[in-house]
Length: 404
Image 1 (cartoon, one colour):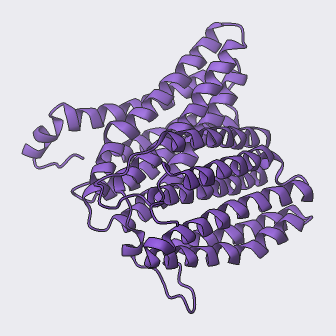
Image 2 (cartoon, one colour):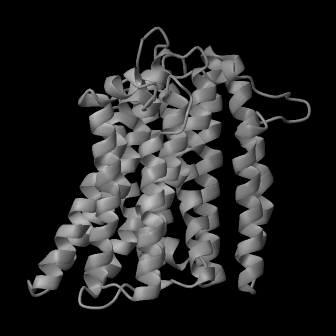
């Protein structure tokens, strides 16, 4: 009997299991592979291809996070499912850098990815059918949407012209990403409601935060490995410190206020499914993607600390930080009692723009560019720390200026 394979929904919150953390190790490798692909394909087409690979990896991981929010990882059959997903995800990550190189590699990528999405969803349909028929129907709709994208995945794998390859896989991902927005509407099966997405909000918030840590860890690993393998010159040391400080500030800005308030908001909302879809399934995409981009920038910085900031470094580093602050501002807007974008994040983006322009036109050194970017992040971190922990919020409120 499949009964008993779902988490007890009477629990106030579902704990993240050790097996889920073990599963995430595969996606540490996947994020590393994406960053490697970006470093080796710095042209426009390469960036687009890297974005498609990232979106596929994120979607595979995110839907597994939804599945383990419902399914109980402490049961044997669910454990076996997660372990099978780990193996498939490892294959996916291994072939990822060569997914656009040949039909053979593309077919392995597509077969693995589609097997993960459809196979995992069918497993959840099976176990939900025993206890929560409404939930099983919801997951069956998701299976139909994943299956609808398969022809485009396969057509893209067989495409010999790069732009057709990209266009077809973009279409496949567009179908899959449109599913939750359209409430997985399927003729004959109807559409899902947010009550079908009843989950543990604290579990979802913690899982998303862990993926952010995975992406941030890539930057730390790249920085440390590069510094260990290079002579400790003054410029390489400056680059190392600047990269590390940037990672710390990004961690601070996300986790000091944003992650905590987001977890509080989803834990106490009456529409946990809608919040999980909007703020974690979708709005975390620019956050995580930008963190990966800054990890690529760290690698470029450490590879040539004595040179001027290259266009690739400026775009990955400066553009990545602008995207990080924008994505995080949108995320924090949902958990803000005022429903407004954080002013500090807008100021940080405004500070980054002249840094990017100066680096492009004045040919700033790579370490100097990194230091100036850190300065913009420091302003954001200090602003938020002062407003939430230093009493600045009350002082500005007395002046009639709400600070978030």
